[in-house]
Amino acid sequence: MEITAVRRGAYVYVWKRMARLTLVASSAIVLVTGVSTSAQAASGKFAYNRADTGFRQVMENPPDGECIGMPGGAGVVDNLTDTAATLYQDQFCSARQDALAPDTGGVYGGASVPHSVVFG
Image (cartoon, rainbow, N blue to C red; front, top):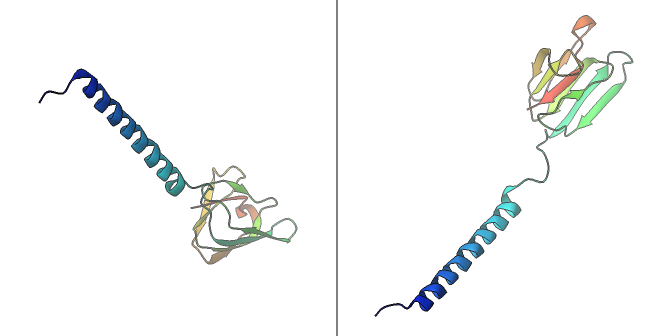
């Protein structure tokens, strides 16, 4: 039995519609389940005593991968997050100074006072 050109066109149309529907449905599933709406963040608190005033500054759940300035410099640092923190001597995260593992701290003074941090 031979399929006529009209029937063949109808089959092609149905297959194209099915392919589009599959593509749209799978794209929707990926968007709903696979794409995060927010950046990853370190869980916990990162605290430091300002080197210039001694006042305690606290960051809760700081974002990963961003250069975060510490105005006044950090004399005492407590990394109470679940993520490693890298300390820098400048405000632009270019002069690496030290790394703090999760749940550790450090004391800094003089010219070695860190001025920024990156998590992750």
